[in-house]
Image 1 (cartoon, rainbow, N blue to C red):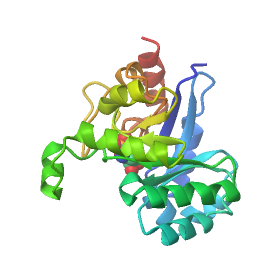
Image 2: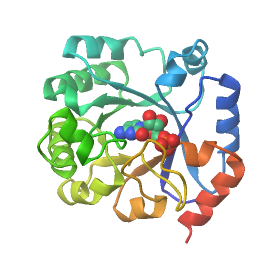
Image 3: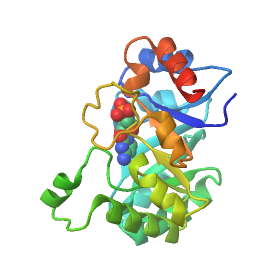
Length: 230
Ligand code: C5P
């Protein structure tokens, strides 16, 4: 079994499909942890399913609000006992991150707070449009700095910035979405890399959605295992 951590994005609103993804990504050769995002959590049966879900999971809600609202949102999740990771936008500022981290300590000591930096769908042009004058790398580095200062457990960025961040933060948990096999469609993602290239950049874990869950899931998982063993 490889010790590399893979999160599978269960991006669907269908419980049956989620069960299929979980079932077909189980393997004794690789550890794949489910990640649930807004689509599933907001769906009629999604939250209900998570209440009684017995495996560890990541709830990727990317919270971004004023500190009190953000931490109240975390409080509302306390019945989700197996939720082990939660995401908050670094953009929300250090006070929000700090208050969320403080709150989660009281709710569930095992709940890790991950700060989301510049989304992997954005590129330098989109940042200019928003009004940023710094490059993606500079911004991600700044945001990593506030995530770390706030005492969060890890950051989410693209594998392209991971090397730089790892240089500065040796122990930080770095998770990278925007992962594709060579030749896959990058869809709405801008900053993409293969699993092996991401791990070469010293990421702690990767997130894979469409490259794993579209088409034949078992074949995709095998492709991933073969790729990681290359
Ligand atoms: O299908 P794909 O592999 O692009 O899915 C990536 C997953 O990672 C999606 O669930 C998306 O919400 C999530 N994610 C992301 N970029 C971030 C944080 C999370 O793509 N910065």
